[in-house]
Length: 330
Image (cartoon, rainbow, N blue to C red):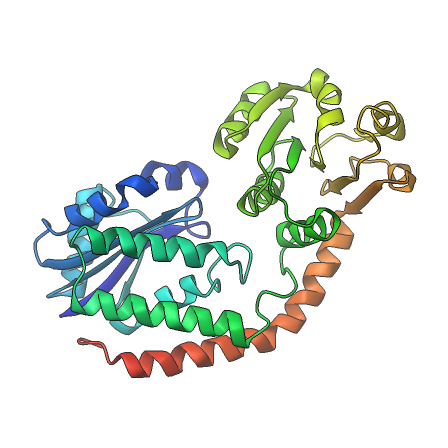
């Protein structure tokens, strides 16, 4: 019996493609069961998060399984999908469960999402010997990597650095409120990273209100007209700004006007625009923490250098666990 993983993620497909194949947590078990009707499929698990949708299949022929699944999805010629066979598929799952394949390297949320996906398939009767052993091994190596390495220490992306700084300021981000000024890709990534760590309310404002609505919908938030964002400022904890304006969009008087209403609570501002959106003088206000793109990139770069050795160690641990697995067809 052979193993295959067919999927797409944040590296291979834009959000408008990923959302077409997103599967809600409550339907993961049923989706796994539906895989068993495909010719040659004996076992199946479906993993679906905001950053990926993946199908893990066990059956007679890895290549035929992949072709059959993509045919069912109507995506036989799509460049967005990857196909990983046998040992590569097992290695990929271990990397996913360990946070090595995530947008924010070393994130912990994905481990629980993989466990939930497997549990749903198991309860639906869609797994047996091959996938049961594979997923249990992936959980073991994921736990070992989180326990025995420092892969989670130091974010290696602008979005991750911003989240890390926010957690230092607020502690846990659960319940934090965010406003995104500008609706570009970097704004989306940073806001998404904050939401993945617990931020609850997200407001999005943009000169194009349609674009603001689009991003707000993706984040489960609310769009705000560009001439009304200042009214929202009094109630948020984090401001992410990334517009193409040639001048400062956020200035000291904007913050001063709401300080008393905010009861002087901490305010974290992330300026990822070039040229900058936020007047540097804003950072001199007592309870304000202001970081620009250069500072965040520098923090991410320093963390990347420290992380390189950790990644090598993690990959070695995965290879050692894969040898123990001794998968059929590998």
